[in-house]
Every structure is written in structure tokens, then in C-alpha cells.
Length: 442
Image 1 (tube, rainbow, N blue to C red):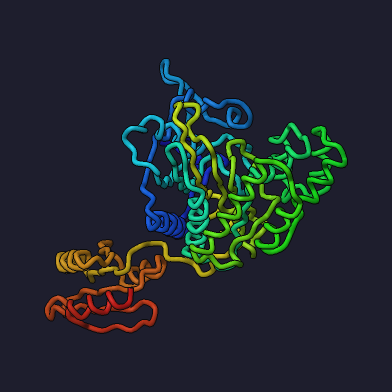
Image 2: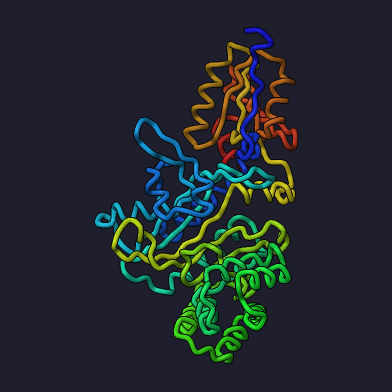
């Protein structure tokens, strides 16, 4: 093959590909999220990446239809999943008789959206979802439990200063109804833009969709109610909105706040915020948005809420639920941009590099590596013919903390040399001593 035949290696825009140390860090975050979800009793679910187009487009229109990757193979019309919620809805409807409710599932997987490529926005990305699905009904206490899972997840990821903002769509919808506003969904989507476009532009958009100046002012004053959680609840009670939906939402919010305390969530990590609306149409009750207070420009890092009927397009069964999603790919990218991760991480999982000094020591080196692996110590053998400096440089570059050197004396005495790559200390020890030191320090 000639030089002109070489294809320049590259990937499509909007896709993330990581170098080894970043991939290990990404996997660690993913594993932490998975372990936290499992600790709360959520079970894993994995649905096909490709679904029938009619399933994904059952609720067609809007951005979804524009962004979906859709194609045909023969006569089969299919598409790549654009989130994990629609596949969940299909799954629960399809396997309804085989599931035990409330059904608690987590799903960590890739989704695909044909969005305009821009910095920090991806066309292929991981989502980490949990949902609790009820059969006919679902107790409001689960909404408090979901918030406790958000709290535990971000604590386990190493964050301290974050706020889970909570609201209830019934409170907003009931208030809009009390004002006689008909186009509630448009108003909700506009309010949800407050952090992105600011108060003045929200006011302008509210007027553009047909609200009077009086209605607009009342809405702005309403969502700007501030104070502690208890003070906001008292303010909502005191304005005496005569609307059944509003009263139901206020009761739900009061119950959720009460049980959040039972889950021992610190007051500084959650707050009622009446500006949180979640623009998606299917949310009907509690809604959540999570913010890292030192990195507010990142935006919400975990969001979700309560919905009345998950699978209405696939079954007549009423399946209410509550859930949240973490966009892991976007979160990881943005945290890397802020340099929050600090020191460079190792480029390998290997903890011990076994180095035979020459070919005659290979078999004993393999024997040692097998022994280490049986003790659950991640190890590898360096078989390349190279000078000792190059072999040690390999360990240094990858961040391998220990090297075991095997030469003639080590083979004869059965006492390999254990080198600590961080301190430089090196000692000839028997294998039991080596294993003891490794287990204590890695």
C-alpha cells in the first residue's frame, strides 16, 4: 500500500473517544454510579440499541423526530434509541405480566441524537437512568427516595457542594389554571429557559405566546418566591390559590420534603425552587434538577421527575413512575474541561509489572504472574527484549506502582526483587512476603 492510499484516521464530530487514563476515570465514574444504584435495590436492564422506528416515534413530532437516526434494512424501518425512557416504556408494556411492581430498574447505556455538533454536546453519549414504575399507583414517598439516590450518587462521586433543586409541576399548572391560562405547556417550557436566557427574555417570550402583562407579572412574582423550604411552603399556602391541582401539588411537595428528612439528606443539599419546570411534556408531578455549586456554568448534571403514565402509547395499563437521568458523557467532558480531576490518573489497571531480565526467566515470571492473579492482584509480564531502563520506563509511563524483577539470582533463590516505583525502594523477598506487601498497599 502506497502513502497516497493511507486513509487519515479521524472520527465523526459529536462523538467522544478517550485516551486510556481518561477511559479508566470514565469507567470509575460509571461503576460508582452503577454501584450506588444497586445499593438502593435497582436491578440492571439493557434494551437493544436499535428499536423499531414505530416504537421510538409513537409520540412523534418536535425535536425527537428531527434528531433521531432512522434507517431501513430491507423492509424493516428501524432507528437508534435517542433516550432510555422510551425503550423502558416499551419493555414494561411488553413484559408487564412477567414483572413485579413496583419495578425498580437502572440502565446505563449509549443513546444517539442527531444534534448540531458543538463543544460539549454529543451525538452518541452515555445516560445513567433509574426509574421506579408502579402498577396503577405509585406512592409519593418514592419521589423522596429518588432524591436520596441523587444525593448518594454525587457524594460517592466525590462531590460535597451540590444542590438538588425540586419542584412540582402540579403547583405550576394549578397556578396557571387559576389565572385562566390555557397554553400551560408553552408557559412551562418558557419558564424552564430562565437560567439559560434570563428573566427579561422569559418575560418577552411569555408575552409573545399571548400572556397579558398582568399574567406575566404574576407568574414571574410567583416563581421568584424564595426562602427556606419551610418558608416557601408557607408562602405557597398563604397565597390561597383556589385550584384543586395546585392544592394536590402542594400536598405532594410537603410530603416529599417531610420524607427527604427521613432519608437524612442535609438541608444544604436540596432546595425547593419554583423556577424548575422541566420542559418535557410527560412530567406531571415532582421534578428535579441537580447543580454543582462550584461549577454552575455546567448546568444541571442530573434531572428527572414523576410521570403519570409511562407506557400510554404501548398499553392500556396505567403505569406511573418516577426517575432521573445522568448524562455521563457530557458530565465527564465538562468536568475534564474544568480540570476538577486534578492529578493525572494511571493509564492502566495493572498494579504489578513482572520483568524477566532475559528469555530464560520467562517461565518463572509467568508462574509469578499467575500466582498474583490468583490473589486478585492485577499484573502483567513484560516480554519485550529491551534494556532494563526501557522496561522500568514502561511501568513509569503507565503509572504501575510495583515492578517484580527476575534475574539469575532471583530465580536461583526464589526471592524476586520487589521495586516500589514511587519510593524507588527495592528488596529481595519471598513470594508470600511480596503478596503481603502488595495486598497491604494497592
